[in-house]
Image 1 (cartoon, one colour):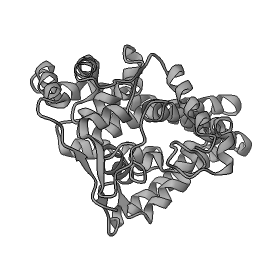
Image 2 (tube, rainbow, N blue to C red; image 1 turned 45 degrees about the horizontal axis):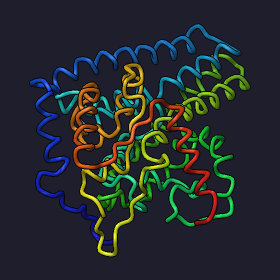
Image 3 (cartoon, one colour; image 1 turned 180 degrees about the vertical axis):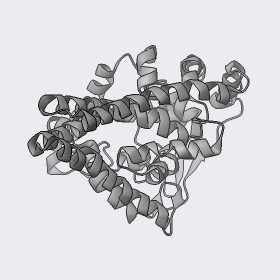
Length: 356
């Protein structure tokens, strides 16, 4: 594949005008001020995590209460990963590099790898969002067809019907299949890895062992109820999968977001900033709860244009993006709530369920 390049933005273009206006509204030492608020959220989330885990281990709880607590952990997983791990991956959790490296270990608590997640997220997804065969977030499996450029298979005729059930297995497949596939993967978007560091491979296997110990083996030793523990384990992954897929499908694969193809020379059709607008959408941007729960994922255009800015500032940045996009005749996509963006995603699946 040729080296991918974006088109050059014209002088006085959208991002050239937008960027200085954004940094005007940010306070001095904005990262340091944001870090205090993000740290408070991290303490609350970690406290909830530890409280639930200790309750399961020390009380101990059995039957339906155990399953309920596992469901709560499923709800908690994504907010912890996004508010702590995701911010740390973008160096926004703290102004201290060592603290950011420490915060990335939150991925370990949920049985996965910060190293591989960062490769996928920064080198692949952020570098070339929605670019076919490059953005690994949209190239995870062929059971779903997200673009007319993707090969049509007979099963896709029913994808809008079976994908809700497949989405319920997202984290289970991520933790037990996708992570291991990444071990043999060498190309992550703009980055080529000759050999993954041995310590990162060891940490990945350690995360899997911890996940099985924490969510299966220790609960069974405590409760002696294998059926309850297995049900709880699957309930955790089903709930975590539903919460996670809400965040994923709402931002890049609705009806209007483009799946982009480079030309034969690796040239992409849009400038970098315009590319973020045509491939990304916001949802529930006026909701403070959604902002904090999804760590700014609902202001996803702002996140892609300014990944170096902590998410707590996105509500102030988003109106500027909308203003300058309109001034330059560019589309800014926003869904009023999770229901409408989810519906838009399934409309896309239904449209692509026929061979085009």
